[in-house]
Image (cartoon, rainbow over all chains, first blue to last red; front, top):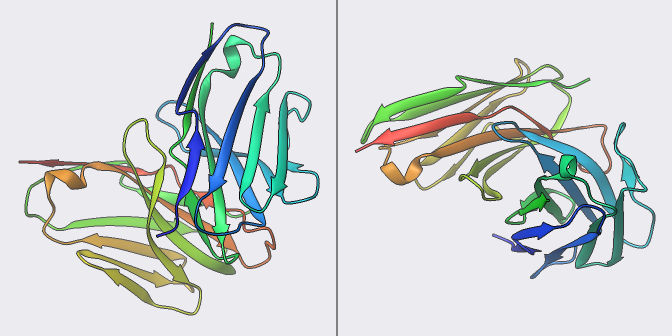
Length: 114
Length: 114
């Protein structure tokens, strides 16, 4: 299957700082990528849809100024958590669509804000 | 709004038994359905993708069926192994969604005991 690489896998940051998470499709081009958040023992919650060359579309209740998404190329989308606080601690996962059909996911990023 | 339900929430079987995981969805107008596997603290691995026009897909010991009219999909795992222990998620893409968003079920946590 296709490969989506997410980096970093773990990050610890101080409250008030910003953290950037990268999502790369390694062997295919992805016009559309998605960012999810997952709480312990729960399923995935879609945060936003990222389209190459245009602004991201955020789901209801997701603060676009706190979670900045940039999809600068067909293989790279980034999620920046700005002014992070402890409540932003979570598991963040990205996915990319292959041929607008099958979704492939990154390994996830465990963010801990202290 | 599409709702996806997975039953049971948890399942424990001895090694060698066949696994049967169920997924139901409320809106039959789907584009496709995917089954994923998630290991603790990891991202999602795509197992099988079934297009709306298909009735089933097979890969090795895995077989997934789709009955769109009744809003059901079943994932069969033959001759289970301890390495099959994981959480299995099904996700549905609506036929009217042009972005490719997936609606996830809550997952079935599987434990295969040696």
